[in-house]
Image (spheres, rainbow, N blue to C red):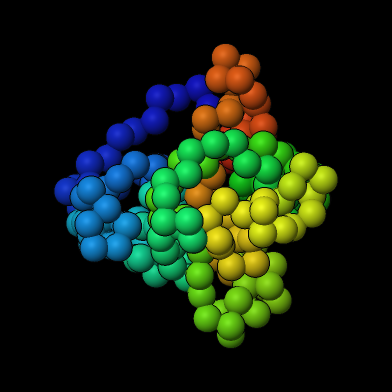
Length: 206
């Protein structure tokens, strides 16, 4: 984007004027209670919620996804992996939607390879909310095999309906467990994550 990102401390209560908010991965507060539950109550999150609800594109990756569900910007919860083990490896994702600022660099149904690294990535919600997610096309990515087929074997954490990424109804908030930034440069071993950031830069410059 030609500009250095602004780093905002969780204890701050105001955000500068920004075009994009990114809640990064990590292990906020050591993942005590539920992952992201304490971070969701950090002072800065009140402003993040307000800006996201006003339309600012907001991206939550891994722990950031957990924080976005805990603060109510996205539906559902992220539970302990079905295996009860930390999972750290590349996985295949199927792109389910391409008409958002985050995904328009991909093609519908495209299979991309993105790393995961989490202990609590098992997405779950109630049947009515799942139906609403499907009806409103709020699922952005699903875990799949190399051919794009959904299966239990291709699901690294037991997520409901193989869900790997979820959008809000407006399409300006995305939470995803896989880490696109970890495969966004040839020096990292792959570039399947790069189109997300290129697409965001193009959308924000428009």
